[in-house]
Length: 500
Image (tube, rainbow, N blue to C red; front, side):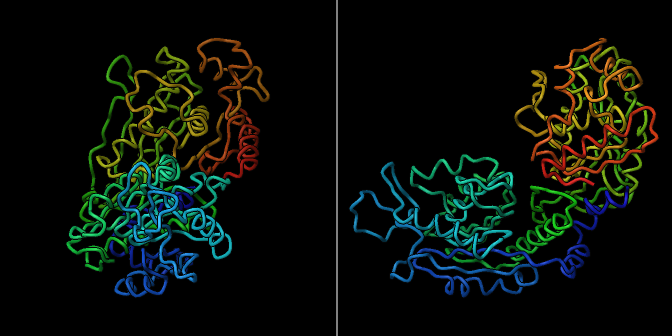
């Protein structure tokens, strides 16, 4: 199992070290396909010339697909023209600045062209744009299906965005595109020219702020596609990470809306042999805590993490799997063991759920402090801890604790779910026995009604947002029947969630 786990996460030292980057460049993984969008008064061939100085940086990792604005053949030259009145004849405004009456003439044609291009020339892994093409890149992200399932309003799928000297659209009719938060939750790289007199640095920074996982690189030049060493390094690091994630997804192992690596200067320093940390989950009134174990060997950059919920039939949080977090740290990742509410602490649902969700939010919110990549966090649960893990993974906002100051700010959903002989259902096959005793311990009472039990039976709550899952059990398990795992696997497959 550990070999499988490590293959999913890529040990942190490899992920960020120079050696790891070189190795990634030699992989047989298919190159990234990037759709390239030119600027105002530009064309695909002009953009090729503008980006030529970056060819040696881009070509090892990416295939660039250049296209022309759909009306270029009619002597047009922009993806749209900003006008103030419907009958305006002035077509020399790319729409950097605007007012309440601004309209982007030609947007409907451009939008249809993008959808057609993705259908006929795709798939694309990412989109790159310069100037007005950078602004179009931002709008293209707004057309992206954040969950990977295209709809008429969000018909495009891709995984990252790169823009040089872009800006936020000023047509009021297009502003709602930026409100699609899931669409903008993807790795993005933004290159800002501090001397840009055409698209001010503030405009490009404003576009970057629309993205959840943005990296901003500045250079001293103007309205150009810069090729300084800093820009080249940032682009290389960004593409290396995107290529590795594409390779993982191609193996069907993991779906990650993962964050691109930060520039080297901003990465976490070397972590070696840090003393384990024991941290309370709540400021008062609870003994629930988590213990964070770090690798003993030196690691560079951000590491993967595995949060562990041990078993114990909800009578104790110290059952099977109690030593898993420390063992995970020995494998080169950060392991976190969670002490959650059980009958042994005179607590029951919903406190056990609140403790579990709080632990995930805390780990993600303190990722920089722990040296963790916040988008490579797995959740591992054993037996009853597997029930709790599946519950959080399928319903990360089931209970909204007023005491959790991270609620609504940080996601409790893991990026990967790992279950060992898990208790899943409080409905299927419910009756006397060890796992029925777990049900009583969970609720703190006997004979909970079926509607209550169904609400916390995860086979009923799997959807497309459930993370990829690795699960194991045995058919001779007399404590938790293997059917629990089997019905969960069936639900995952029905929702097209990768499962092994």
